Figure 1 (tube, rainbow, N blue to C red):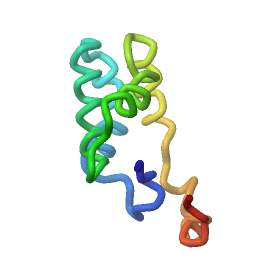
Figure 2 (figure 1 turned 135 degrees about the horizontal axis):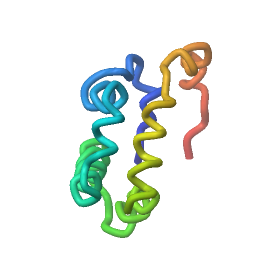
Figure 3 (figure 1 turned 60 degrees about the vertical axis):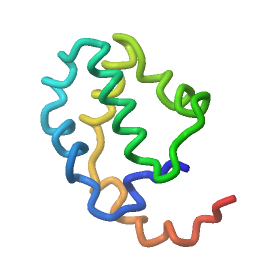
Figure 4 (figure 1 turned 90 degrees about the vertical axis):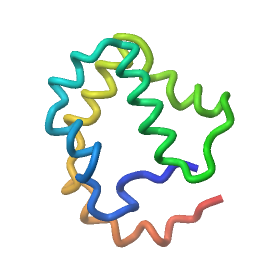
Length: 96
């Protein structure tokens, strides 16, 4: 199960903040280093871990040079203010 940062309150902390504030530097990582970082970040986001096929499916969009560019482009665009107005409603979202 993935938990969106929106559901966790203050989401501009830790690695998230470091990457967001320095995306221009992270974009310069060699692809192998970026992929290791993205995988590590995703693994840290799961308490119970992922089956290998599920992990691969979540990581596939972020692989290679295009994936690396998209990953950090996404970080540059994120702002907590964009979700503050409806955060209080998240508890009422039905989860299967």
